[in-house]
Every structure is written in structure tokens, then in C-alpha cells.
Amino acid sequence: MIGQAQVRIPATFMRGGTSKGVFFRLEDLPERCRVPGRARDRLFQRVIGSPDPYGAQIDGMGGATSSTSKCVIVSPSARADHDVDYLYGQIAIDSDFVDSSSNCGNLSTAAGAFAIHAGYVDPARATDGICTVRIWQANIGKTIIAHVPVADGAAQETGDFMLDGVTFPAAEIVLEFLDPADDGGAMFPTGNLIDELDVPEDIVPGGKLRATLINAGIPAIFVNAADIGYTGAELREAINSDPAALERFEALRTIGALRMGVIKAPEEAATSLRAPAIAFVAPPASYIASSGRLVRAEEIDLLARALSMGKLHHAMMGTASVAIAAAAAVPGTLVNLAAGGGERRAVRFGHPSGTLRVGAEARRVGNQWTITKAIMSRSARILMEGDVRVPGDSF
Image (cartoon, rainbow, N blue to C red; front, side, top):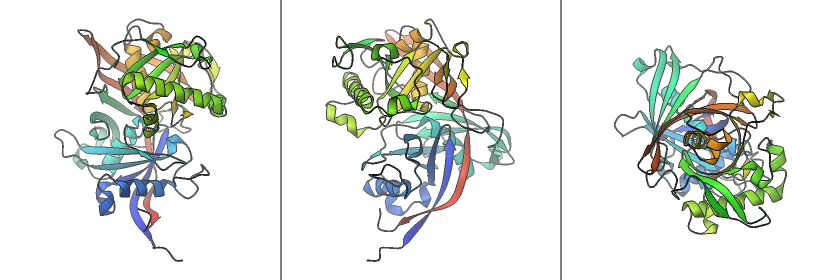
């Protein structure tokens, strides 16, 4: 049997922060894929090579990790004071699911650079220096401002900025996440800086676990590493090679999601691959990063590890970094206490690949905390551009 011929679709393969994804201009997509729906999801899946029961994504652009199983659509923005709309899809590796419920903070960096590359920004603004690109993050309805270095009308990609988790230096792009907390509710959904969760006793002796539940950048659940039997200095292999540990983390994520109101029933946890994220924190300690570099305790304010798509992330998700910055800025959260407590506008945390500095501006209005913006630096680079090809009957 001969199937339909392959379809060519213009695309750009980009690294943004510690993630990679396939970027599309909206107008370049097949017409039925320009709107949300099954056709678009199936296109994303076929491009990336999912669902793949082998978990390898050999027949696609994906790299068989949560950080490399992503697609992005960028288009001119219809919103005032914004340059582009940025829509992100997280593609499950071995299951038939595309998650569009949250943002990718790392690829937000590439969205700013891609907006210039795609011709969506007036070339007069991209001459020399820094071009400010205002991005509407369509998944969560938030504004992101990318300060992209430019030269001769193009985004500058090479430079001397080093990002732990990325091997080579590049040009620094500063991101501002404006008002990153959920518009639909409080930044701390329960009204508490620390909650006590009822959990199975085989996970935590005594069945009680303290957690900070926050919604900033992404809904996130922070627990103390020591309370669940870890040091906070673990690398990926220590967690991801332990199926029982991964099951425990998913159970805790579900319990936290229910308390936050992100889901109404436990089975709904499977409908969001990334939100809420679950992370564990600890006071600073020296450890050997995955690169072999010694991260010294005096370099950092705290240790942080987070899971994405059910696996420990090799560095730190950008959205979880926003949540870390927000939680660290509010005195009394577990993240803030791990960092030593007190008022903080920025922290440097240790993650499996090294360190990252993030900042946030917090203020209290009545009994509610709010974050006006979170700031971090990343980098982005075009890896390949041209066309992706998918069978014509695959979407």
C-alpha cells in the first residue's frame, strides 16, 4: 500500500535556554492546522515523532526528553502593545497527548529571537544594540518581554554568555515575565505560605508533608528535600532510574494539585504533563553537577530540583524558575526559608546542571502577595531552518 506523499512545511529548529523545539510561523502551517484542534495536535506529534512506544522519537525531530519534545507557533499579535503571539505545545513522548495548558519559559527566549528572524519586528528596531520584543504568551494569557541583542537587523546569537546546561556560549537574552501569577486566583491558592498535606505513610512516615503551593509562572508544589528522603543535590539518574521514586513524586503532585484546585479529581492529573510542577528544595550545599563541575555551597542560596513530564529535569524549567523566584521573594515560604529567609529580590539556586540566578519583585496588598515581574537570563540560537516533512495523511 502506498501512502500519501510527504508534505513540506517551513520550520525553524531552535534552542531556547535549556530546551529545543520546532518553530512555525502561523501562516506557513496547513490551513486546518492554523486553529486549535486534533489536526494541529497530530501535526505536532508527527513532526516530533510521537506517540512512540519505544520512547525514542527516532522518526521525528524530538530528542526523547521533555526538554526536546516541543513545538511552537509564532504570529503577529492582534493585541495592542505586543509584537507577537507565542503558542507552545508540549508533546508527550510515548502517549497520545499534546499539552497546551502551560508555557515553556526556556523557549520564551527563542520566541523573542524568532520574532525578529521571522520578520514580525520592524527592522528599524533591530539595527544595533538591544531590541525589546513584547510577546503575548497565548497558552496562559501573559506578557513576556524579551530583550534581544541585535546587529545589522538580525538577532545576535553568538556571544560569551554561559548558561549551565548548555555546552557553548551565546548571546544573553534577558526575559521579564510580567505579573506571572494566575489572574484567576491568588498566587498562593490556599491562602497559606506553607500547607500541610495528607500523604500516604509509605511516602512520608506520619502521613504529613509540608509544602508551599504557588501559582507563578506555572502552578508549583515545593517540598523540603529532607522531608522526602533526599539531599536536594541529586542528579537525574538518581531519580529517573528509580520507578518507585517517580511514582511517589507523581502521587505527591496529584495530592498537591487537588489542594491547589488545579484539578478536581485525581485522574485529571494525567491531562497536564507539566502543571503543577513538583520540586524539592534544600539549603545550599556543595555538589558535583552533571558536567563534572564542582558547585560550591558559597556560590548558591539554595538547592532546587524539579520534575517535568514525570522525570527529573536536567537543569530547570524556565517556568519553574519563575516560581522559584516568586516563592523566594516572599518571606516564610519553604523556598525562602531554604535560601536563609528574609526579604529577597533575587536568588541563585543550584540545579543538576549548575546554577541559575533569578529575580522577582514581590509586594503585599492586604493579605495577598503579588509578583509584578520575574527576571532571568537565557540564550537562544537557530540550529537549522528549512522545511520539515510529514506524511500528508498524518494530520
